[in-house]
Length: 365
Image (cartoon, rainbow, N blue to C red; front, side, top):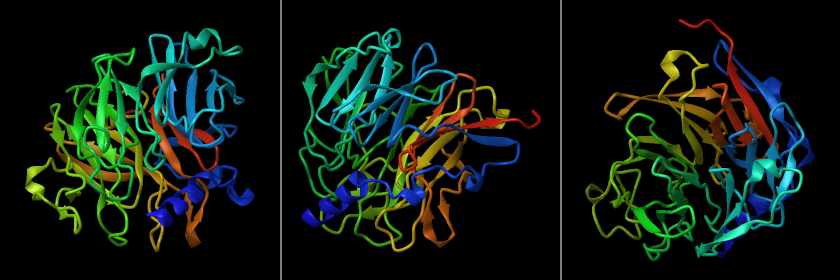
């Protein structure tokens, strides 16, 4: 376990090699009719994104403790918070920006009117475990007005306290009324709500050290509070853990889709814009951060997931790629996706320190 934690620290906290620090737009590919362009390459370790009411793009990071704000039409962001502990997650709610910082949730009040002189972050009166293993958090407000916060397992594979770890929690905006709404989730770093059904969908990263090709990362759907998605007993819906399986996989909620082993599926969003062709509406876009311990790299792309009317899987396909080049040269690592106000799709890249914009310019059927 110590060796694994050292490897993870080296991966996420080491400075970027100069040869791959900048984005390489010419190598990135999107479908015919679409265009990808650089919104900004001045966002070191860009992770989760959120939009403010005035169009400000807020970006968390997993290094340097900074949170960024990028105003419409600008390429140089402001640093609105610094010195925080892995402030990966950002969520905008009623004028305030909520930021995850491993064991705490911090709030920057009325942030869009104070971008040049941001307020001091205020901690909510709620605390989470301080473990760095799977400790950085994607956060978001649901249609119920509550803040949803995942707490990953503090390990690759173990059986932690289910009230504290490997779950998804929600609370009121002031931190009160905290409750666990889903269990058996190893490490979710992205979720969104279906705009039609209101159900929450989330990615979950599969365990390591079972080989190159298993278990798969998962796309899951929470149909009702209290559901259990299997960790650590079962992975990907049908793989009993060789160490911790105490119940059969049939006891747990199976994933809607298997996304592939080690692809590191992170941020996801339902496409609810109007710019893309009609067949994209209601689709899911998922950022695949890419493998770190596989003999041949996989992921490093954005995938499109199409669903049937009943929420079952219809099709998976590659939407944007090129961050992984021949010879396994890595140019970037997509971390999150976000639908902009104009209907374009934003993609953050923590390796290149960039945010890209994908827009549609083809004919509308």
